Amino acid sequence: MDDFQQPEETTISPEEVTVIVKDAVDSVVGGNVQYDHLRVGQWINNIIETSMKKLTALNKPFKFVVTCIIMKKTGAGLHTASSTHWDITADNLYCHKEESNKYLYCITTVYWTAL
Amino acid sequence: ERSRKRTHQRRLCCGCCDSDCGHVTLRRRRRARRRRRRRTRRRRRRSDLACQQEQGRKRTRGTRMSERKDNIIELWEATYRMEPSKLERFMPHQVNAIIKEAMQELLADAQWDGQGCQQLSQKLCRVVKERVKQLHIPRYKLVLQSVIGQVKGQGAYVASRCLWDTATDNYASYSFKNQSIFCTLMVFGLYLE
Image (cartoon, rainbow over all chains, first blue to last red):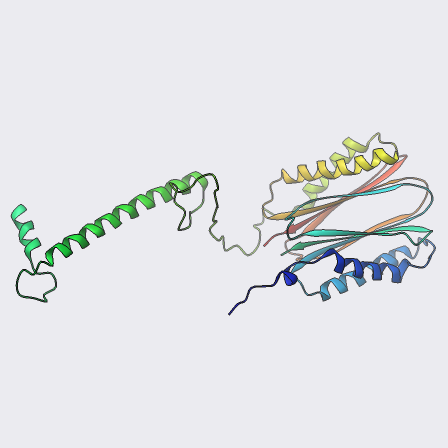
């Protein structure tokens, strides 16, 4: 009779997403891969596709937006900012910065909003 | 007429007994109760109508105008709407125009500065968010992301992928570049069911 959903089924914690995004990024640009302008499109595709598949495998009622920025390290600066208009109790975001690679910056952000 | 009324009152109530059994008072009480209920129903209908005219929606049962005090709990009637109407959607062309205007205002003469561009990217996000909110698109959640970088001849790639309902959700983005900085702003509109 009790059909109420448990809080674990209707929320996503940033820790779960951390693991997913970290794996996806490390598998593509981890390990000091040099910046290659011809291949960067494919890398980004791979990172985003892998993260999306794992996020949908969580099977939770959420919409996802994943953005990824890859830039070559030349001493130039880079800033990203985010602003949202949503329900703070149900929606959240996670931003992952790749620091181990010394040739490129990779910033991956995942936003999830409740249905 | 008065005499007629009296005879009515004196009539037998349910036919259970032959004589005047005193059940007459019960009937009178029932009638009075019915009259009171009709009065309160009329009063409620009038206040419902007033509420509807004032606020443009029906009030659900259980919330009286007279009972509302400082802690108002608004109960909204279900709209039974499955998707947004055609005019109340996230329109990418409108939002693109807003982003373009905001960027040209804030970034036309901007020079790269480590601290300054951090504030600038946050300000840009805030300004565009307020302007998109003024479009008053109901039941849409907004997610904005801005990227500002210094121009030094390097390559950069910004991409996004979304898992949403393609019929109701959409995005708008615009890129700007001048001598010393490049900027990309993406606005995602997600429908809340």
